[in-house]
Length: 58
Image (cartoon, rainbow, N blue to C red; front, side, top):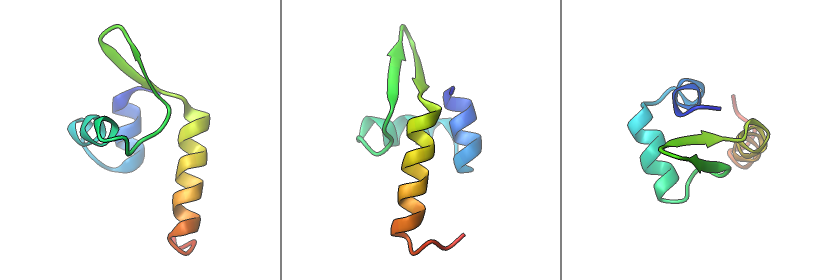
């Protein structure tokens, strides 16, 4: 998953994704040369865990 795809999924900017990843706030990020990619399975688990910890509210 690209940074652009993740930003769209999270309804945020690419810069916010880069910053949050740099702080360790988004798991599953891998640098491939100059690009940053995210494992969609890890992102799905992370989002599921975060929605459960938020009381399951949508």
